[in-house]
Image 1: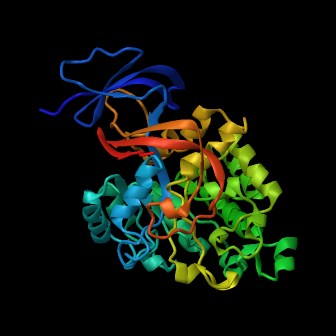
Image 2: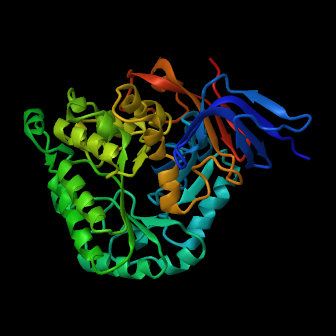
Image 3: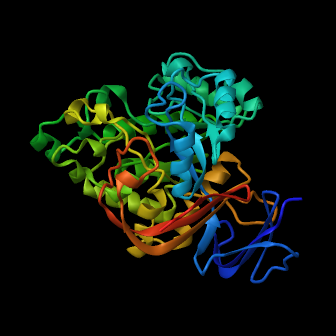
Length: 427
């Protein structure tokens, strides 16, 4: 018989119930069985003293690119899991941008079977369109009935309005979540950074914020006639925030996410042509970054994601314009997000909600909360430990972090999945 495990002397943080108290949690057979200031423990219980550190639900990252299948040299199931665990992430939502593309149930099951040996939970998000070509819809109905949570074309937008209208109408029949990457191809395909004075000075082709907002506004118009659940994958600018706010005020089933770099960095991180800061959508101007932070504060943006997208050195150590876009972020999602707490911008529970109960609610998961019967997916961290981000110490095979050398506060000490410790920090 498996032993009970008691986590004691912990600052329990549960954004779902606004719980913030010193207490204990009992775990047995992968589930939380008791929570309180003091929990009655059976004999021979395993006791883990949290030493006053924070204990919250394991983080859920809704936007992670992996190298499996087709690009093992970038990332594997094993090291993606290790990277996630060291960042307090217990569930990663995998984008379909693989080789072959995850666009049918057989390929979803292939990845699920490969991920059974992973130390964290992997949730595949299959493609909305076949081969990510934006021309023909995948079998959304069949995959939804088989338990698929959400659909996305990853880092590609569905540009054809007639096709998008069809997707939204069909998806509403199955309560499927449609996740859209926002970029009008004609305005974004030939650019590599935010359009503006800095792009002109650097001599680089720009991508205007209108490339994002026009696509978003179009989708909101299409959504007015259907009840589909829609998620904007990454919001980066003030104009898009206003569109999302209007849609929410109209009671539309719309949610939005933001990647950590888009509220922690602005376009000036690109100076000296740092290709490790190239991503899609690009880093924006400071006024847009500030607007994103405000949207996180007021709830217009629901979810924080890492946007973890490993790229090998050969695709990054080239001229900026031809470098691949993408940054890793699983290992830094919590520590960099905690800057919002240390800078007194947002309460700790509100920040954690963007990575726990909010994505769980959007995806219909049982995790993301501290409650009896919930999966024992836990993250124990010290929010005050200072450290310098060092790519050489990261679990990711690729080291393309935009936060190289950044001084931050917040260290994950232990990560637990289904009651099993999968990561423990060694000083």
